[in-house]
View 1 (cartoon, rainbow, N blue to C red):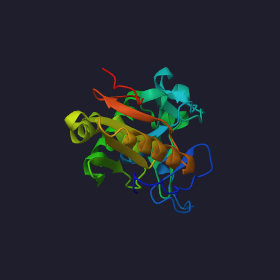
View 2 (spheres, one colour):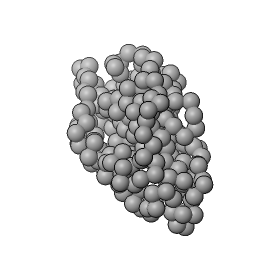
View 3 (cartoon, rainbow, N blue to C red):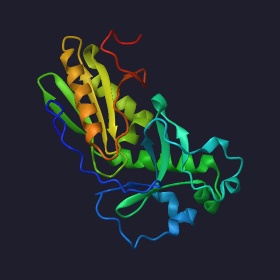
View 4 (cartoon, rainbow, N blue to C red):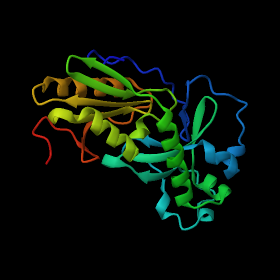
Length: 240
């Protein structure tokens, strides 16, 4: 990937069903996947991760479930509010595709919403601590990206340690830290320096092209990291 040229077409195949998203490798879906994790929390716990979904994605809000059993029979994905109106869902990693956890799963596991959320984010943090970053530079222009293909790349932005890393790595010398979340498999961050406003336009175009061509797009927008939070990016003066 080169952020200074047009984005390549995404090659991640959608699974084609409402409760599944493509997973590592995005190969053909396996008919031999064990469904034990869907019924057994001890099997599911190491495999559950948060994933970012587009704004407006429907689902059952976790904190509105009175008890795990109250969700029995509900096949809507369970969700939380994410940054900038994005949605956080929870995926059970499987061979070739991932299943979005729903209310029926929560009832079968007999766990609380807090347990699901805490376990998923703990798994994401452990994976992120090992996952590499790619860096590209063209003169003083710098891009950091996470595109491992494991399926959790965009969701890394939910971790405070990741926003701290991006801010520390890219935010020196007055640079603004831009963030793109065009697709599930890509987190993109760049340093926008005060004397290089053209880079902001290039970054926006890249994110939009990538999202338009992805089967698992998340958002066309570009964001800016300010005090560890995502805010809308504007070519105007940075937020105070």
